[in-house]
Length: 120
Image (cartoon, rainbow, N blue to C red; front, side, top):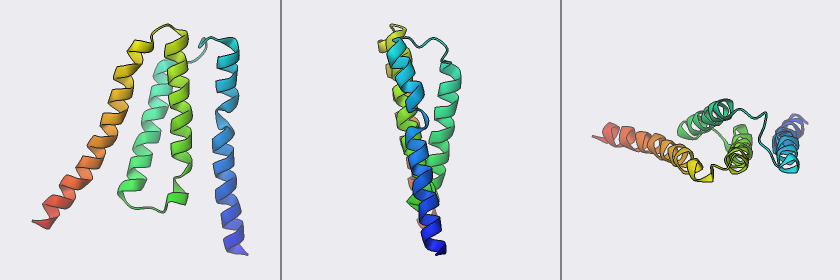
C-alpha cells in the first residue's frame, strides 16, 4: 500500500512538472511576444535547476527523486529561446546555451577528477 502511494506521488509530481510551464509557454507563443518575462530570473531559475540536478546525479540518488528537473529545464530552455526569438536576438542565445552546456560538463568533470584523485 505504501509503495503504491509513493509511486502515485512520484508520478503525479512528474505530471504536474510536465504541465507547470506549458500555460506560460503557450501564452508567450500566442502573444508572439516575450514581454513580461525576465531574462535574469529565468537564467537564475535555470541555473538552480541545473545545479540541483547535477548534485542529485553526482551523489547517485535514484532518478525518481530528481526526474522532474530535466522536464523543468527543458521548459525553461524553451522559454529562454522564446525570449531571444521574440526580442530578435536569436544569435545572442548561443553564449547562454554554451555556458549552460559547458557548466554541466565542468561539473561532470569535477566528479571524474575527484574520483581519479581518490584512486591515487
